[in-house]
Amino acid sequence: MVSSVAEIRASSQTLVAPGTPRKPANTGQVIRWLILFAGGVLMVMPIAYMISTSLKWPHEIYNLALVPNEPHLENYTYVLEDGRFYGWFVNSLVIATITTISNVLFDSLVGYTLCKFRFPGRYIVFIAILSTLMIPTEMLVIPWYLMSQAFGWLDSYWGIMFPGLMTAFGTFLMKQFFETVPDDFIEAARIDGLNELAIWWTVAMPLVRPALAALAIFVFLGNWTAFIWPLIVTNSVEMYTLPVGLSSFGDEADVQWELIMTGAAISTIPTLVVFLVFQRFIIRGVVMAGLKG
Amino acid sequence: MYDRLSIRQKQIVWAWAFLAVPILFYVVIRFYPTANAMVISFQNWNLLGDRTWAGWANYAKLWNDPVFWKVFRNTFAYLLIGTPVSLVISFVIAYHLDRLRFMHGFLRMLYFLPFMTTAVAMAWVWRWFYQPVPIGLFNNFLATTGIPQVEFLRSTTLALPAILAPAVWAGLGFQIIIFMAGLRAIPRSYYEAARIDGVSTWTILWEITIPLLRPTIVFIVVFSSIGFLRIFDHVYNMTTNDPGGPLNSTKPLVLMIYQSAFTDFNMGYAAAQTVVLFLILLIVSLVQLRILRDN
Image (cartoon, rainbow over all chains, first blue to last red; front, side, top):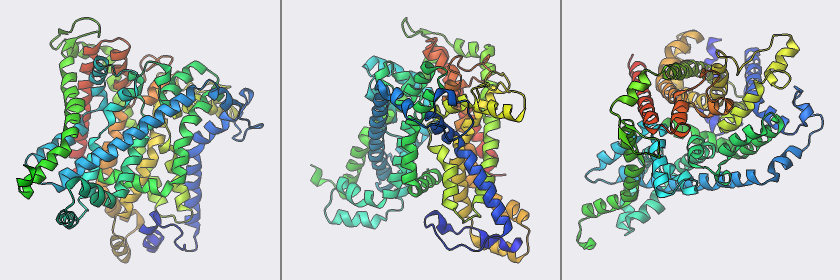
């Protein structure tokens, strides 16, 4: 047993490069695989049951069977019929996209400036931005609400978006990654006569593309699933984001669980599909953001 | 004008030009609201009438509010159950998953998938699971095995763990991925040296793997603790008919803040609660860093 520790340890390459040749498995490994497989199946069960129930008729939801007897899309037709879910979907998509673009631009610009420029006050600015990580969003929602009320931002895209346009987390993450960009590259570009904005955009940014992608994934997912602030700042059904809309729909549909599951599936499937397509890439991004951030 | 500046001076100009908008953002959207929340916590205000100074009255009210102490206990129950349970489960899975190559990516995908879901959607899915017979999945399953029914969300003792379960479930994938990255960062030569010395697998785990994983463990503990202390989406959506119920047995601090501010419009009282939340988060993080970092 002892001797096998190093050999059976998956090589560090597996995270990035799959399909490394494997050795013949022993019984211990087979049992380990089977248990982990069972656990993994259990992990996706809630998602599987959500999708399965969204395809069932009302009389069938009591059935424990995962595969519906007569699968159908009537629930989707019914839920999407009045167009509310389309609206919420668009709202969430627009808000998450704009917020992501804003974070990618501003967080990296600030991270870059704090990393590569020498100027008085640099340290203070960095500490000040970093210190906002300690402040929970919940402490700010009341002042944000009052601010939105005073400026007429309630119930608008801007009102939902403005608190998240920049994040200290993203700034810190990008600063860490710009450390890996050699100063010589920037100096060389300066000698070539590029201005600082062009150096940032054309020299530094392409070198930290993986980090930008990681940041974009985190910000997008965070805004796609955000609940408490959109719940507070929106009043009209048309302005709801998907989570807020789903929450109100759940209450309204009451005990029609097949319809609630359909709504839940509509708000979950897009991120799941995106994940399945860019799986390796997203996991690498999550690790990067998690460890450096 | 600009051309006459030295290279160093030009850099300073560029730096502040780049930082101008972000600094404005952080001052207006982060620092001012923080100070504002603290100021409001010393005021009485229902959004419509005048703001009046209340001194420490909001904090005194909170101290004497039995609901607050119930909420305080709930909030820490989420933390004290959620963090260790998710830490142990995710470590065990990551430790074993790290040793498998056959369909490694597929297994990892299964465990990570819940992290990509929306908390609100999954709260509703789990709420359905917990319904009594003949609707809920769990109770239907129990019925087929002959075990008596469990009133998950209607029980004052079981509702809190029942609500915590999907929160733990959704976070596991992230923690597993972080743990596996941490495991991979341990140099293989350590294991090889231990193997040559004939050290047992169990000893290697306790003497090499876990001590070297300390930075990863610190990160996961602090990160997940903050998450559990701020739990809201799951509780709100699984108890919409009586938010935080039954009998406030599942109400966390963030839900109490939400209700004080946006149901009762008692802004001063809610702001005082947010200051308390801030202090709890600060103290818990500092204590954890202190204990886990140098031991």
